[in-house]
Amino acid sequence: MDEAATEPAVDGRYAICIGSFYEDLAGRLIAGAKAEFQAAGVREDEIEIFEVPGAFELPLAAHYCATSGRFSGVACLGAVIRGETDHYDFVCGEAARGIQNVQLETGIPCGFGVLTVENMEQALARTGGGKRDQGASAARAVLRMNEIRSELLD
Image (cartoon, rainbow, N blue to C red):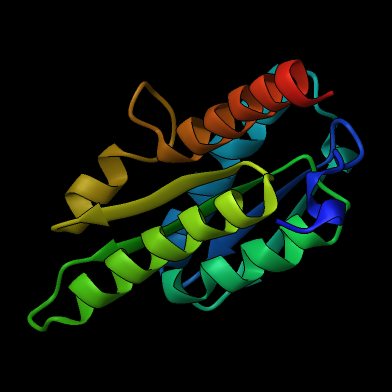
């Protein structure tokens, strides 16, 4: 891990990286993450959103954010809905692995809010509020991991 990556970013600034392939789901995931960050006291102007085409591009966007030194954490959001080919398996696995690698390599928390579902009904059930809202869950994970990092490393 390089030294710059272990230094804490500006407290209170967070990035949201969103795969926008499913626009309606993307908007719902962003809303959940923003609401969670704001409930924790993060101001609207302390949240930056970076849109990428799909879930496969999320790890690189997260890497850019994590290594910029501008953010205390990154919520990675998107959706992959199973289709008729193996594409689903490759995208889901690589997105998860890549996002995990970013946080392990940089020390910057990256929340995994990528829906990996069978159909749109399942996706809608996991966005837009409630206990299963994956946008909110990803933001909550980032906030908690940032607290732990601060407790142990600052």
